[in-house]
Amino acid sequence: MSKIKNEIKLTSKIMHDHFSTIASKYQSVRTLDTEPILHIKHRLDEKTNINMADVGCGDGRYSLEFLKIFDDSFYIHCVDYNENMLKSLETNLVEQNITNFCTRQGDANKLPLDTKSIDCIVTFNAIHHFDVPKFLSESLRSLNDDGRIFIYTRLRNQNAQSVWGKYFPLFTEMENRLYEFNELESHIKNADMKIHSTKTFEYSRTSSLDRLVHQAKNNHYSTFALYGEKLFGESLDTFQQNIENNFDDLEKISWTDGNTLIEIKN
Image (cartoon, rainbow, N blue to C red; front, side, top):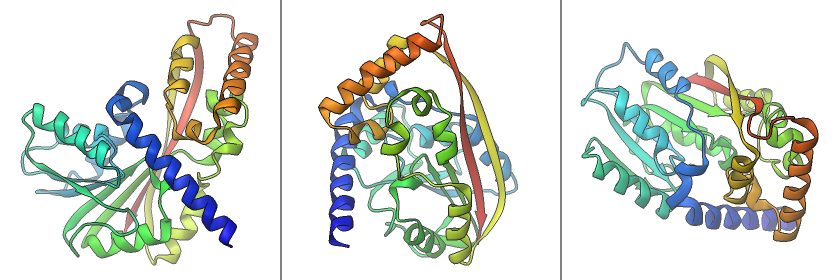
């Protein structure tokens, strides 16, 4: 048990260092998907004066998109444990004269939110960093009686079908924190909550090999931070060779990414 705890602590430290380092350039190496944002907006159309929390908000890429599509009565609490990410978020939003937000540094497993104060909690590509039962329990405490949670994530099987899962050595083995749908479903049932709807999103991606190499070197996914320097270098070399062996045009490498959105009602 102590070995498992030590591994969890080590992974947590690696992730904290990773996100602290990447905060200033996060937007340049990550992909933002607007489709789930529009879908959530549609699901909330009957609500007014929405008080939302974006948990694991990072540098606020998704928070900003919500702020763009809702009116001034909308307010968002940007929650993340990483101070550098929140500083980057705040600087960006203040520069755009956005005021209907606040940043809250804190753990997703002990949310810095008042009891029954939130209409909607969203989390994008972050659930695998959380203790899911604790996050759900804290979300249930923080939500109003008719509140909702939206979890947007890539499942393990979706991760395996990405360009990284197919061609980057050990990528799926290194990324052992992701869930399958039935695992998340079990956690939700155990929290005495119900899945209201699910939606799968598929994205046709096209990139150059140079761009993919740039993303890997700059930790496009936090998974890359789990590789040691030597292993990462060897794996990157093999990845480039795998791409060259499987694609004729290295300027137009195409694949499909998949993500899942789960809507929960308490």
